[in-house]
Length: 171
Image (tube, rainbow, N blue to C red):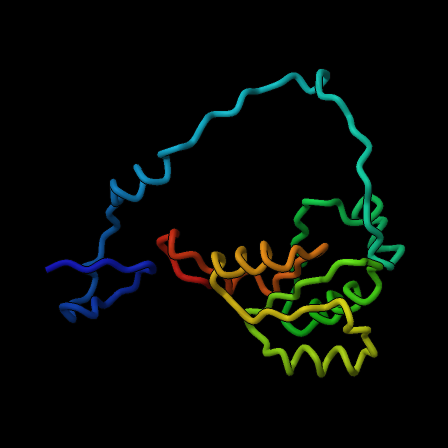
């Protein structure tokens, strides 16, 4: 009898025996992840040409300083911290302060549109350019990003996001 599981644990739910689990690498998963990849080439750092990078101000001077002058187009920033310290609140405040003609797409895998709107109302956030998308499937999120073409995408919170292409569960 066999069974596959993304996380290990002591008692097997299939046979009800203890300590019968062992790790086994699946060749098909390893092979499929290597297909279609091309190796990059190393380059001497002295030969890299510097291009002026435009930055978008977050509206918070201290945060812009920490980010080296603001947000960089195409970059990713991971905001971490204990639950309840204000990460989502700060994110909404940044959405409000960023002056953009395009929209901001706020993707939430934990909170509903109503919860985000309540917080935005409490903070007196201008909601005109903020779109809410409640989803955890990365493929659907990517499709929504392609459709809306936002200037900024917020994913709150990244640990809730999953992909059918990855053999693990969101944590």
